[in-house]
Amino acid sequence: MEEISRLATECLARFRAGTLTVADLEAVCDSAGRTRRQSVLYLQAPSSHPYSRIIGISIFEEGKDSEGVDEKGAFLYRTIKEALDDGWRIVRFPDISQGMDDQNNYGLGYEFILERWR
Image 1 (tube, rainbow, N blue to C red):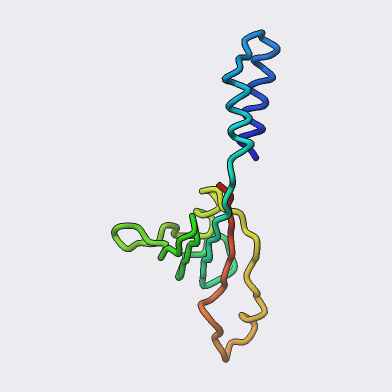
Image 2: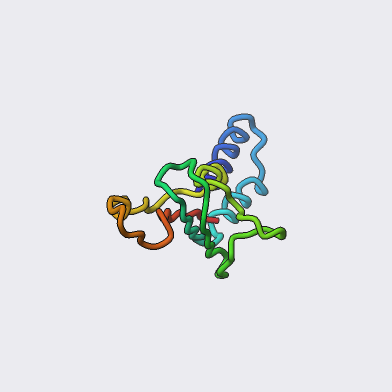
């Protein structure tokens, strides 16, 4: 949606300047007709803080399940904050009630679920 808004704003400026072309309007129409896809990112961290280091990752993007690691085997993101800076949005914060029980450890720490649309 941001791309359509940007293109429309540029078209308006070109219209006001008297330089709007058919190609400009076609670019807006092409952008509006594209199908956007949701990508989902699961991040596990030892705490609920956005600067916590990542201890687990899984990405579902472009219809594929990715391990979330680069060629060297390192996580694509080191912290939740890095994922946010890369355009991901948090859609579910971790359930912090699991951290209230010091005697039992449940799951892989605190799981954040993030999304982005492309």
